[in-house]
Image 1 (tube, rainbow, N blue to C red):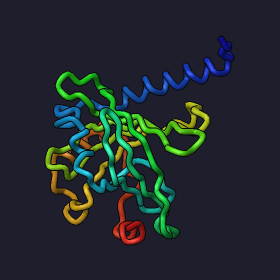
Image 2 (cartoon, rainbow, N blue to C red):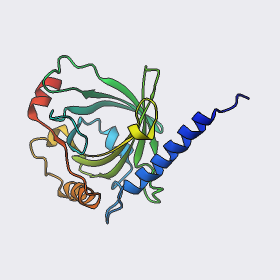
Image 3 (cartoon, rainbow, N blue to C red):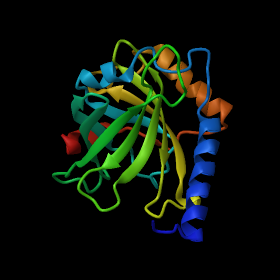
Image 4 (spheres, rainbow, N blue to C red):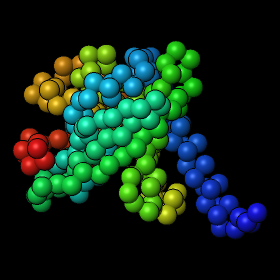
Length: 207
């Protein structure tokens, strides 16, 4: 059996510490967790757009959405479209595989999160996404995403909180008040602010 280097052990331990810290940042609210198994949310084959995010995009409006879900058992494949609004031209989507997880050990809901992998790339692991809220009207979701850098170094790990909307809700973004309530609660509780927001220009360029 091959021995594990000290560097590898250190890296693994550091990542586990990052996961523990991230778990602390995923906030329990009075309505913590989605209202139902998130597989139902994905099986509706929505266009799920990022509307507000704590991720820094260096002055560029947010421009990202997921679509074309294919669910098999406890996993899903889907395409993530993204790009800078000033330079998006025939964007090529990233194909992602998501394994459904029970992050919060929820006793009433089977799956509330995804472990995401990039398909067709050498460095496949991408992130964890935990659904703090997914309304049963399928219009809005609050997501906490734990993103790792390519080296898996904790210094490159980012915790991002996002408000995501069904494409049909972009013109009426506050169609699900509970969704906004939970998103704002998380921002206030963690002393975070949104860094970037959706722009209609994005949809024009990505679609």
